Length: 170
Image 1 (cartoon, rainbow, N blue to C red):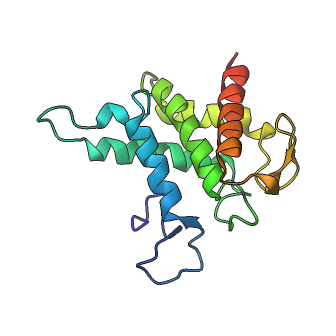
Image 2 (cartoon, helix red, strand yellow; image 1 turned 180 degrees about the vertical axis):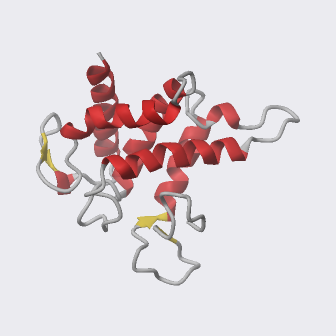
């Protein structure tokens, strides 16, 4: 939230800070997304957590987050930075589902010559199927603004994005 190089620069709402006009993402959504990736053994950030006496590689975690979320911002400019009432990408459900997708895409990107290009290409392939600000998520039968932070919607949206990533990569 404080790093100008971060796609989340001044975009995360924090209770302890002044209200900003640009802050649209709840801090708990970002914290949960990071925590889920670290806790999942197949998570993109899990490979950098501490083992035994070795410290966690927080710099590598940060670089992974910036790489992926910068590509998300570039791929979905019409949905980025809007309040959750105008964009489900900025909603807790969108952050959660895109975090699950981050784990899949970033794990593949690690072995690529150009990880940033791999991430961007992967996101561009699924972009036509995403309805962050209008329309209906066809496979879910839900309008863009019906997606909520409830277990069923989180699972459905995460599963759909993972499925789209797999299908469009073929």
